[in-house]
Amino acid sequence: MMKKAFTLLELVFAIVVIGILAAVIIPNTNRDTLQEAAIQLVSHIRYTQHLAMIDDKFDSTDGNWYKKRWQIIFGTSNYTDNKVAYSIFSDSATASTANPNLSEFAIDPSNSSKFLTGGYSGTLYTSDVRANKKMNLGLSYDIYTITLSGGCTGQRIVFDHLGRPIEDSVITYTASYKSGKLIQSACIITLKSLTEGDANISIEPETGYAHIQ
Image 1 (tube, rainbow, N blue to C red):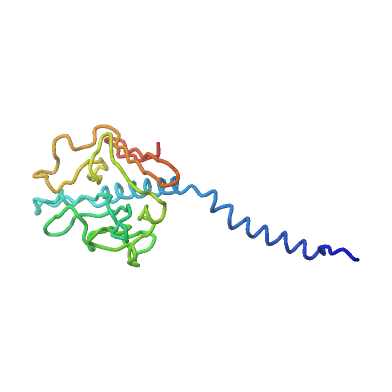
Image 2 (tube, rainbow, N blue to C red; image 1 turned 90 degrees about the vertical axis):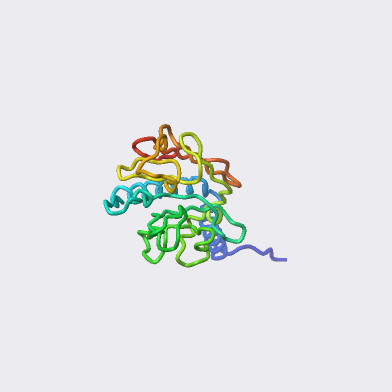
Protein backbone atom coordinates (compact mmCIF):
# COMPACT_ATOMS: atom_id res chain seq x y z
CA MET A 1 0.00 0.00 0.00
CA MET A 2 1.42 3.40 -1.00
CA LYS A 3 1.98 5.86 1.84
CA LYS A 4 0.54 9.37 1.43
CA ALA A 5 2.98 12.27 1.65
CA PHE A 6 2.88 16.04 1.25
CA THR A 7 4.03 17.36 -2.07
CA LEU A 8 6.54 20.23 -2.18
CA LEU A 9 3.77 22.56 -3.34
CA GLU A 10 1.58 21.62 -0.37
CA LEU A 11 4.43 22.19 2.05
CA VAL A 12 5.16 25.61 0.56
CA PHE A 13 1.47 26.53 0.76
CA ALA A 14 1.31 25.43 4.42
CA ILE A 15 4.40 27.54 5.28
CA VAL A 16 2.91 30.59 3.56
CA VAL A 17 -0.39 30.22 5.47
CA ILE A 18 1.45 29.83 8.80
CA GLY A 19 3.53 32.93 8.01
CA ILE A 20 0.42 34.99 7.26
CA LEU A 21 -1.26 33.87 10.49
CA ALA A 22 1.86 34.68 12.49
CA ALA A 23 2.07 38.16 10.96
CA VAL A 24 -1.54 38.84 11.98
CA ILE A 25 -1.57 37.24 15.43
CA ILE A 26 1.86 38.04 16.90
CA PRO A 27 1.60 41.89 16.71
CA ASN A 28 -1.78 41.72 18.45
CA THR A 29 -0.56 39.47 21.26
CA ASN A 30 2.46 41.73 21.84
CA ARG A 31 0.48 44.98 21.84
CA ASP A 32 1.07 47.10 24.94
CA THR A 33 -2.23 48.96 25.10
CA LEU A 34 -1.41 50.66 28.42
CA GLN A 35 1.77 52.18 26.98
CA GLU A 36 -0.11 53.25 23.85
CA ALA A 37 -2.75 54.98 25.96
CA ALA A 38 -0.11 56.77 28.05
CA ILE A 39 1.81 57.97 24.98
CA GLN A 40 -1.39 59.25 23.38
CA LEU A 41 -2.48 61.07 26.53
CA VAL A 42 0.92 62.76 26.95
CA SER A 43 0.66 63.95 23.34
CA HIS A 44 -2.78 65.44 23.98
CA ILE A 45 -1.70 67.09 27.24
CA ARG A 46 1.12 68.77 25.32
CA TYR A 47 -1.30 69.80 22.58
CA THR A 48 -3.62 71.37 25.18
CA GLN A 49 -0.67 73.35 26.53
CA HIS A 50 0.24 74.38 22.97
CA LEU A 51 -3.29 75.67 22.34
CA ALA A 52 -3.19 77.66 25.60
CA MET A 53 0.08 79.33 24.60
CA ILE A 54 -0.87 80.24 21.03
CA ASP A 55 -4.47 81.18 21.81
CA ASP A 56 -4.10 83.64 24.67
CA LYS A 57 -7.60 84.33 25.95
CA PHE A 58 -6.85 87.78 27.41
CA ASP A 59 -9.55 90.27 26.44
CA SER A 60 -9.63 93.67 28.11
CA THR A 61 -13.34 94.00 27.29
CA ASP A 62 -14.28 90.72 28.99
CA GLY A 63 -13.93 90.53 32.76
CA ASN A 64 -14.21 86.74 32.69
CA TRP A 65 -11.65 86.09 29.95
CA TYR A 66 -9.55 83.79 32.19
CA LYS A 67 -12.43 81.29 32.45
CA LYS A 68 -11.92 80.50 28.76
CA ARG A 69 -8.46 78.98 29.09
CA TRP A 70 -7.74 75.72 27.31
CA GLN A 71 -8.02 72.62 29.43
CA ILE A 72 -8.08 68.84 29.32
CA ILE A 73 -10.87 67.19 31.29
CA PHE A 74 -11.37 63.55 32.27
CA GLY A 75 -14.80 62.05 32.65
CA THR A 76 -17.20 59.45 31.30
CA SER A 77 -18.05 58.99 27.67
CA ASN A 78 -21.76 58.22 27.88
CA TYR A 79 -20.92 55.14 25.80
CA THR A 80 -23.09 52.23 26.97
CA ASP A 81 -21.48 51.72 30.39
CA ASN A 82 -19.83 55.15 30.72
CA LYS A 83 -16.23 54.29 29.92
CA VAL A 84 -13.28 56.52 30.84
CA ALA A 85 -12.67 59.24 28.26
CA TYR A 86 -11.16 62.72 28.04
CA SER A 87 -11.71 65.93 26.10
CA ILE A 88 -9.86 69.12 25.19
CA PHE A 89 -11.90 72.31 25.23
CA SER A 90 -12.04 76.03 25.89
CA ASP A 91 -14.99 77.23 27.94
CA SER A 92 -15.84 79.98 25.49
CA ALA A 93 -19.57 80.21 25.94
CA THR A 94 -21.12 83.50 27.01
CA ALA A 95 -21.89 81.90 30.37
CA SER A 96 -19.03 79.61 31.38
CA THR A 97 -20.17 76.27 32.79
CA ALA A 98 -16.85 74.39 33.31
CA ASN A 99 -18.19 71.62 31.06
CA PRO A 100 -17.79 71.52 27.28
CA ASN A 101 -20.57 71.99 24.81
CA LEU A 102 -20.23 70.97 21.18
CA SER A 103 -18.87 74.32 19.97
CA GLU A 104 -16.14 74.40 22.65
CA PHE A 105 -14.24 71.19 21.83
CA ALA A 106 -10.88 71.54 20.11
CA ILE A 107 -10.81 70.42 16.48
CA ASP A 108 -8.75 67.31 15.78
CA PRO A 109 -5.71 68.62 13.82
CA SER A 110 -5.40 65.30 11.99
CA ASN A 111 -9.05 65.31 10.89
CA SER A 112 -10.96 68.60 10.84
CA SER A 113 -14.31 66.77 10.79
CA LYS A 114 -13.68 65.40 14.30
CA PHE A 115 -13.46 66.91 17.77
CA LEU A 116 -10.77 66.17 20.33
CA THR A 117 -13.07 64.26 22.62
CA GLY A 118 -13.61 60.60 23.26
CA GLY A 119 -17.20 61.38 24.14
CA TYR A 120 -18.51 63.49 26.99
CA SER A 121 -21.62 62.66 28.99
CA GLY A 122 -24.52 64.86 28.00
CA THR A 123 -22.68 66.46 25.07
CA LEU A 124 -21.42 63.94 22.52
CA TYR A 125 -21.56 60.15 22.34
CA THR A 126 -18.43 58.17 21.49
CA SER A 127 -20.45 56.51 18.75
CA ASP A 128 -20.89 59.89 17.02
CA VAL A 129 -18.67 60.09 13.92
CA ARG A 130 -17.40 63.47 15.15
CA ALA A 131 -15.83 61.96 18.28
CA ASN A 132 -12.25 60.68 18.42
CA LYS A 133 -12.76 57.10 19.64
CA LYS A 134 -9.09 56.74 20.60
CA MET A 135 -9.73 59.31 23.33
CA ASN A 136 -12.21 56.91 24.87
CA LEU A 137 -9.53 55.09 26.85
CA GLY A 138 -11.93 52.51 28.21
CA LEU A 139 -13.16 51.51 24.78
CA SER A 140 -9.83 51.64 22.93
CA TYR A 141 -7.29 50.64 25.59
CA ASP A 142 -9.17 48.90 28.43
CA ILE A 143 -8.41 51.72 30.88
CA TYR A 144 -11.01 51.55 33.66
CA THR A 145 -10.03 54.56 35.77
CA ILE A 146 -7.89 57.71 35.77
CA THR A 147 -6.81 59.43 38.97
CA LEU A 148 -4.97 62.71 39.57
CA SER A 149 -2.69 63.05 42.59
CA GLY A 150 0.45 64.81 43.82
CA GLY A 151 0.28 68.48 42.91
CA CYS A 152 -3.23 68.23 41.46
CA THR A 153 -6.67 66.96 42.33
CA GLY A 154 -10.00 66.80 40.58
CA GLN A 155 -10.49 65.73 36.98
CA ARG A 156 -8.94 68.47 34.85
CA ILE A 157 -5.78 70.40 34.07
CA VAL A 158 -5.97 74.00 32.83
CA PHE A 159 -3.06 75.85 31.19
CA ASP A 160 -2.39 79.60 31.19
CA HIS A 161 -0.85 81.60 28.33
CA LEU A 162 2.66 80.74 29.56
CA GLY A 163 1.89 77.03 29.51
CA ARG A 164 1.79 76.77 33.29
CA PRO A 165 -0.58 74.11 34.65
CA ILE A 166 -3.45 75.02 36.95
CA GLU A 167 -5.02 72.27 39.01
CA ASP A 168 -8.73 73.01 39.20
CA SER A 169 -11.62 74.53 37.30
CA VAL A 170 -11.31 78.27 36.76
CA ILE A 171 -15.09 78.63 36.82
CA THR A 172 -14.93 79.69 40.49
CA TYR A 173 -12.23 82.33 39.95
CA THR A 174 -12.96 86.00 40.47
CA ALA A 175 -9.57 87.03 39.05
CA SER A 176 -7.16 85.61 36.49
CA TYR A 177 -5.40 83.51 39.17
CA LYS A 178 -6.42 81.95 42.45
CA SER A 179 -3.97 81.56 45.33
CA GLY A 180 -2.32 78.15 45.46
CA LYS A 181 -3.86 76.82 42.26
CA LEU A 182 -0.83 77.05 39.99
CA ILE A 183 0.63 73.55 40.33
CA GLN A 184 3.51 73.63 42.82
CA SER A 185 4.63 69.99 42.62
CA ALA A 186 4.40 67.33 39.94
CA CYS A 187 0.86 66.37 39.00
CA ILE A 188 0.60 62.59 38.65
CA ILE A 189 -2.01 61.10 36.34
CA THR A 190 -2.44 57.36 36.87
CA LEU A 191 -4.02 55.16 34.21
CA LYS A 192 -5.28 51.80 35.47
CA SER A 193 -5.68 49.03 32.92
CA LEU A 194 -7.95 46.02 33.26
CA THR A 195 -5.19 43.75 31.96
CA GLU A 196 -1.80 45.50 32.16
CA GLY A 197 -1.54 47.29 35.50
CA ASP A 198 -0.83 51.00 35.98
CA ALA A 199 0.99 53.76 34.10
CA ASN A 200 1.90 57.14 35.56
CA ILE A 201 2.17 60.42 33.68
CA SER A 202 3.80 63.43 35.33
CA ILE A 203 3.05 67.10 34.56
CA GLU A 204 5.81 69.26 36.00
CA PRO A 205 5.08 72.54 37.81
CA GLU A 206 5.83 75.88 36.12
CA THR A 207 6.93 74.39 32.77
CA GLY A 208 3.91 72.11 32.37
CA TYR A 209 6.20 69.49 30.80
CA ALA A 210 4.31 66.18 30.50
CA HIS A 211 6.07 62.83 30.38
CA ILE A 212 5.63 59.16 31.29
CA GLN A 213 7.32 58.20 34.53
